[in-house]
Image 1 (tube, rainbow, N blue to C red):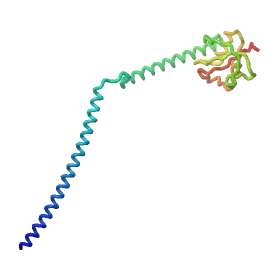
Image 2: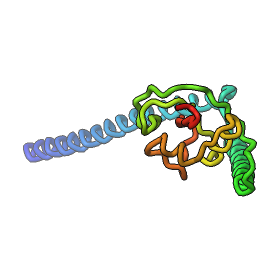
Image 3: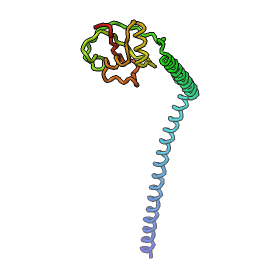
Length: 188
């Protein structure tokens, strides 16, 4: 019986040891999870601290709030609306002057020059001629430009002559800032 009791005690010790090992494993897993959570909490605390520091810093001079941007956008829209109204008034006035047949009030200052350029958009059809270069302004038409040069130089100049001196020029869509050649029909 002593042998039976001893073997039973050894079996119980083995089972107890196995349970103790399982409990130790679970305790180790809990400790590892707790350490990982501690690291995660420390990282979150640092992030919160950094954000609080940023909030406590004064705003830079070059930053704008959403309200500032909205106000600026409204001002830009108002300026653009007024610009469009002014542009329409100018176009209406030019159209009235064109219909009346009077000289335009657009001040075109011609600069005497001869063409030496090989650019087809400014080269006259019949070789080098005397004339002027003119930079297209907003609201210009070939008719208005021709009338202004005719009045200024006391010559007869037509929109067709300007068109012929500038092959490829679309008279219905003049590009602001583009230089066009204005021929001087009196200079041969």
